[in-house]
Image (cartoon, rainbow, N blue to C red; front, side, top):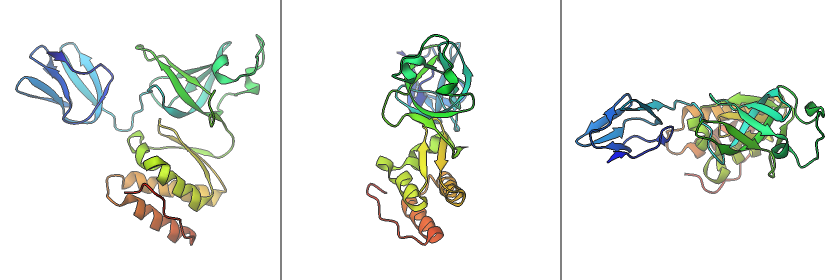
Length: 237
């Protein structure tokens, strides 16, 4: 009896949130007999005895293990504060930023300056939503040049595709380097026309993410736009 989920947990429609009569159904939930269920995809919040589900609608909540694209918004004595495209900023400490020895009082902007973009990994999220990130893994780096665009975080899995199939197809067609952050920020780097085409393809995925046969739709779109034959990727629908 009682709560079946943790506060701030992400739940899907139909998921059991609580059993018994101690809790009350709030916004985004409904009661059936003894149980309260989620009526939408969202994040669990407790408001007194009421259980609510706040819709995600593209809002990112940092989770352990996520690879995210962030902007440097502050430089402290101990490292860098990053905008995670969410309600919570993240801290990149000196030890998580580089294997170099950094002496006290060193100019940290030689590594990352204000407004730089980086791709990093979430390594700690406390119950108070203090977020720590690391750059100490392959592929985690400063993103130089290119452009950063926002997408709906709910659509990120579709943009990446199964085992990276969708984003690989866009890279193949446009020649762009692309990093898709799980926080809904995407970095694109190529010549202007190809960056624009990659962005067009990403917006098309966002608009049609619920459609079956999406891989085929995007493949046809890219082939038509580039005049290139795109090698059929595995793991499509």
